[in-house]
Amino acid sequence: MKKIFGKSVFGGIAIGDISFLKKDEAQVKRLHVDDTETEMKRFEDAKATAAEQLKGLYDKALAEVGEANAAIFEVHQMMLEDLDFIESITNMITTQEVNAEYAVAVTGENFSQMFASMDDDYMKERAADVKDISERIIRILTGAGGNEVDTDKPVILVADDLAPSETVQLDKSKILAFVTRHGSSNSHTAILARTMNIPAIIGVDFPEDCNGKKAVVDGFEGSLYIDPDTDTLTVMEKRRQEELEKREMLQKLKGQENVTKSGQKINLYANIGGVSDVVNVLQNDAGGIGLFRSEFLYLEKDEYPTEDEQFQVYKSVAETMAGKKVIIRTLDIGADKQIGYFNLAHEDNPAMGYRAIRICLDRIDIFKTQLRALFRASAFGNISIMFPMIISVDEVRQIKEIVNEVKAELDEAGVPYKEDLELGIMIETPAAVMISDELAKEVDFFSVGTNDLTQYTLAIDRQNPQLDKIYDSHHPAILRMLQMIVDNAHKAGAWAGICGELGADLTLTETFLKMGFDELSVSPSMILPLRQKVRECE
Ligand code: PEP
Ligand code: MG
Image (cartoon, rainbow, N blue to C red; front, side, top):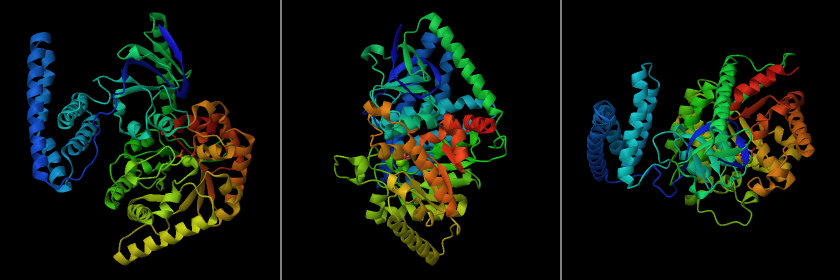
């Protein structure tokens, strides 16, 4: 047995086999195709190859493991011919003019979700089969040798590093834990691991020959056991069970209020990166969405998402949240979130460079496209919009002018939107804190981005693992700023929340309540622990 220490990013115990992340394999992107007939032919050919492969697998399994066990490949062959499945793919290719692999991926995902939600256990199991089939077709279409996670059963995913765009595209159902050699605990990849509710450790110097080996991840301690001995396995399995029981206990808090013993209430909302996280938000009974990092929509793609594509996503989130608040942050790229097609110039210091609102106020076409999509979607739910990386009142006024132009255009076109849509800003620069009295007069709410606020206040790059030790969001400078922000918000009649990672720090919950924060927005998995903590506070 070998035990290697790293740093915890998200707690939890995972036991399983290690799988190295295969990089440079085809990841499915949505592409526009002009020639839908050729695309249909590609799909038909891939389907035929898949059928051949499955027949081969059936024959092999029949010879080696008998008819009962081989039957699964027969089921797969039947599913491959399922008319609804084929119709959905055909429809997407011909009407949406998208590439075959994208149509297969989306259809596969939709169908497997549909099966997974059925009551019948047999049908539930078919969800995995649909996924398997669509992945087979995608592998054939892309010529990829295997999945990004090259296995059928869930694994402990080990990689040198993971970019946010890679993490967001991984099939979460196949990952028991993340282990990376690089990365820092405040990076967006770490944040995604927390959002996905998956144990994760970073800074682990794993040996190159551990692929396929049995391992245990202790996400609490930040350690990885390779080839664990029987004693370790027994202890860890027990802890894993205890963890599951604890989670079940937290489930009892669903439907309960976020209220302290003395009656102070606070809103607990969730942070998300995309539509697929909404299930988690609802499962954990969040009161709303306090931060939708909309840039992931852009990161997942090869070209600018269109107004309609964005509209569909925002509308779907707003509708699914059924009247609960959904705060969508406008595009926040730059720094660690780089997107090729934006063609951003190389910068020596990107964290302090051309990013977030600076790009939006410069490339107004991109900004307006997003705002139009947001306003249109606001007719379908309770959407609010917030803007990242603000440093001046002037920026907010510019934003409001553009917002008014967008509204006027929609009015003219007779397109409905939410009249009283709330506008807010993120407070994540010391400049914004110092003028928060003035800024508060301009907006409906503040949401404090403590990740960046800590970075800029302490002059510590949040991406630099070497500085993780001194990246201290509890620094008195930050705590004083937080008090100043709430006070200034309230004086101007605005509300204030925290959506940075610090919001989930249970050792500060009481402090945040005393400071007077109205809202905390955290990873979905932290909603119930936080509710429990709030209810224990005086
Ligand atoms: C923050 O900076 O705290 C924040 C919530 O934004 P992001 O982590 O996406 O930069
Ligand atoms: Mg930020």
